Image (tube, rainbow, N blue to C red):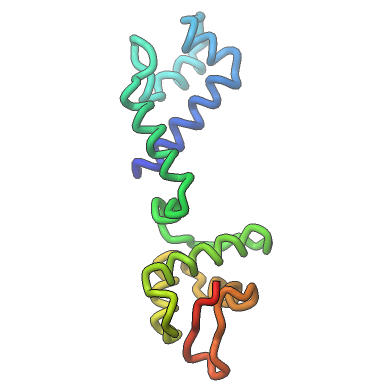
Length: 152
């Protein structure tokens, strides 16, 4: 499991502790627990016998901060399946194309095979990302479809 995936898991656990009076009482106040709750808390790698593990929570906070930046997409595997709703897919397609052209350079036209290979590093469905970017005006395509230019 990647560091980011572990951090997201820890964050979910911490939110669960804060949201659940039973878990909160167990973690903070040492309340009596049933077997199921004890098993759940035993799985928390950030919680030791002496309480929360500050270094583990610090690493978690730093990993979550990285997820707030535009390069957060790079922390995860390739996107196997793009979201279906346009309002979810379009921003993702635009961000992928922005990342691609940050690396390729925005001032020159890019041949379709090069663009496809670059997009494929981020998403399996290259055609939908490229099509979204063209439809949204982020990319311009030559009439023959051979090259693309980033227009932001």
